[in-house]
Length: 76
View (tube, rainbow, N blue to C red):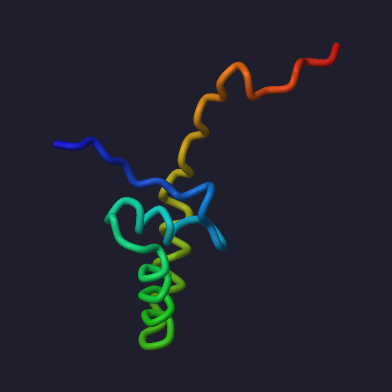
């Protein structure tokens, strides 16, 4: 079984990266997740509340370690 974790996206975020992270975790398009949140907000009011709760609870994805050749030399 694949070991997947739910993270908020750093690269593909509109506001907090929640929808992009959910889309990546569920392997669906983040735009579809965003549309679902908007529809939940418009037709029930819970979309914004759920988004804010997920924004607080779901951790942001860790940064990938940079390879040695990509960083500029340190200035001393």
